[in-house]
Length: 75
Image (cartoon, rainbow, N blue to C red):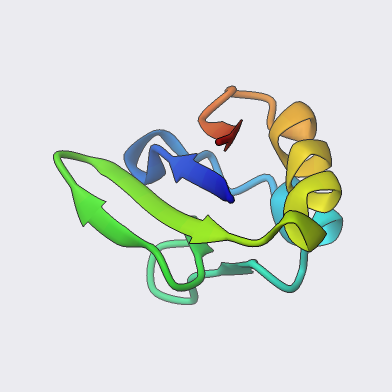
């Protein structure tokens, strides 16, 4: 199982996560920040558990993020 963690408040809206992992990320039309699809928010951190098949693309998204607000953890 993989957990993706996103600190949405710190997002600068660069769009890299959406380009790297479109199946899990979108840009909000309301505020221009990225949205982690399926995630739940707790104390400013948005998290979602995904399967192994989403690991590589989300690792690329985390590496591409210029403000380092995406974490991908393997369990």
